[in-house]
Image 1 (cartoon, rainbow, N blue to C red):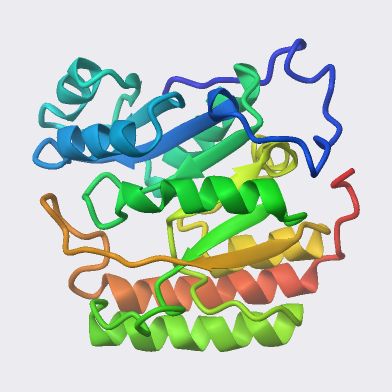
Image 2 (image 1 turned 120 degrees about the horizontal axis):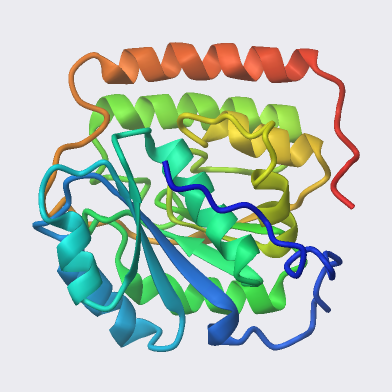
Length: 261
């Protein structure tokens, strides 16, 4: 596995940016975890460039056996390759480590299958600029109640949404959304060895909240997949729910962390 560790230069100035400082597109890294997405990745990268022309685009090729890496590189993205499939959580952490090492202040992450329209990227940038929150979540349920999401996944999301809202005291409607933007303090938190999220969803958000980070949502829409295979097929949703509930239970047994600052 290609691993990027924070450099000494990147850690010299870990304090928060001025919340009223203008967000420069050059300070943003777009992270796309990808596994066998050769059929969609080129169009996704192209649409990102149409929406935000300046940010660097990083594709974390998570052990693909197709031409995902080659197509991404030809489309102008930086590509980091995992030697085999390590899962979306590890792929995202590779992106976070790259961002910290190369001095980026913000990361916006989205899927490679075309479900996350890049047209919403400017909304994330606006929210990063105006909010004091550390993490911006794109919620599919603030516009149309997630009508394009399969029924079983809508039910699972509702369960975790209500559970997380009760545990954090914050109204969170879409804890399973992978369309997110974050500021540097969260990136520095996520490059630690203690990060170990296979699916960085409700348990990840609960961990962030208990560590003192602030979360906020903006409305987004989703589109049907353009290619590849969903990670939530077959009996995987059942496994996901059980694993997530267990992870949340374990997190609640731990002491709250105050190491954010």
